[in-house]
Image (cartoon, rainbow, N blue to C red; front, top):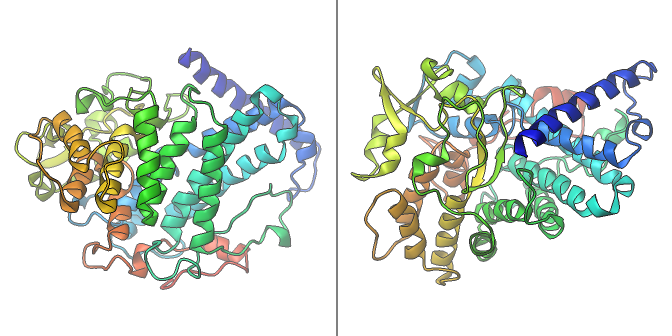
Length: 452
């Protein structure tokens, strides 16, 4: 069934491209987007939604770069960068110019997803009644997730200064029909961007089904909400959402940590029982871009990221998660991304246990389970002895070892915990991406970030 659906996605995407090509024969002005001719039926809307998923899964976004680039900015004590891409080296050295092409492409891809979801939402009246809630929920899930990730990369951390005045990213909720003054949207505040992401994800949770194959379901929306609330410091809502996923969802931890990461010999694997939402990677769509930078040449990668021994030394003896690291000549590498066609794990169940543990600890509560119970669930899967009691340091240590290199957590956790990143304080302007120069040049209403 899933192989059929992957083929169906590819076919729909090709159909969408062919349709777009045929439309261009009408020789309309390039700045005009004739939606009244392009989206006419329920099928057209669903094709547009599939296009939003495909755009979310490109290398510049959730196929890996949105996580890689965040981590490169914050892992000076964890990795050694040996790559030759100047723009990525700039991120590692925390000296990003405002014309960095990787950052610009991330921004562009994010707003392409947003525009496609806006096209879906503007045409819900054309969707068959039986599919309308699901289509709306999937579009709002994607839009809310993208806004959350964009604001925490291009805006100051929620706990850095005043979120009601700090600038976030432009909020665009309608399709861009023409490139004119109406499309030159100013940046909203960090607070308002978070509110928009919460509204989208909350609506998505209410409208999505519990089972939706590998597409977003209500548990995926709840899981991203849990991550967002944790980042915001809203621990009550974070633990409530995490608890909902753990106690209500159909997910379970893999018996072995290594089972979450597919065998390099497999061309494609289905989601594991632990995956709440993952980007599906197939040879037709490209490769897992985390593979490009973390994997050795023997596993189709460039091997640009070398893991420092000091990070490996921070694991306890007997921690089975160390089996995901190996010596390649003289270089330490992680095998998490050795499969070029392995799915990208956007959010998985282990993170929910960690969020619930931290939320309960900070709230002095035991909703669902005690913090020690949740941390021991993670530790026991890793082959470690249980702890009698846990503190925040123990929880953060488990987050670092459990989720390393998967979701940009080295940067995002440092910011929410107000920890230094290398020699920089968490509030340093150098830890916020610049608004891309080409966007500033095209939109006079955009204000650049401090330091750029």
